[in-house]
Length: 295
Image 1 (spheres, rainbow, N blue to C red):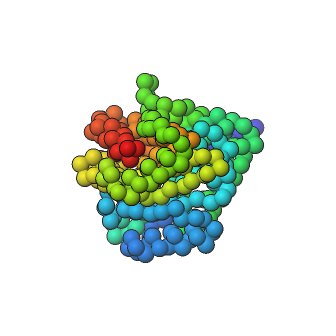
Image 2 (cartoon, rainbow, N blue to C red):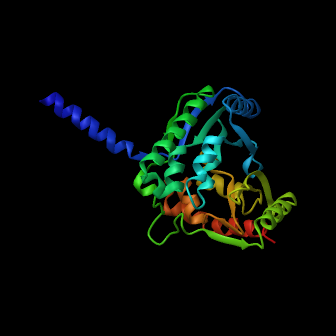
Image 3 (cartoon, one colour):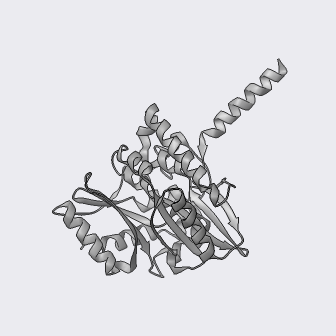
């Protein structure tokens, strides 16, 4: 009887803990420089059939790097997810130089799927497919390392689907509208042109276009020294570098972005209010940079 009780409690505790998801997974600590580690990441991803969408050094800090990748399964899943779910189609590996090693991490696909696919994750067949894709991504990254250590905080699956930092703060369903164009093609051309010109101290890291669905995502690096990544990342935590770059999503004629007070909090869920206030201007600064790409 005692053994059965203990076993039951372990199962119950396992179920409870399984409900909490970390935003990042630490993959490996590599004994190589940033260039070599980046090459290894790209090599492993391409050998597993992933498409490399882009890479860059956030804030022009060469102790940090991000590689953005996707594949057809991830893109197909995002197409089924509804409004702005395409944002989850861009997976990100982060690299950080620390204590003579290069630490490699990835945004936890499961965390992102529950946050961005939301109510769809309550549909059994969709949830099963999403968790299968998440498991595949984790398995495919084992060529880099198999630590897979969760970090960055924990949020329950239920809370992720309705995530907000605190009462009164924005949710996923409260995006910032940046512009409404005359057509999808006009929006695509305008954003491309302005990114190429580097307006607003921005860098085009990647773009992903679904012409059939009239949707596009742009990953935008923020290189302004006073208002961009080099300002806020050292304050809120460079180990979460796989959160970058920030995105614009164009759906039909309308371009939007996730509200900064939602997106920063989602990717740094352990932030204290004291630290959050130190980047109080950053959501507005990001919005200003994105707005400069709409003109």
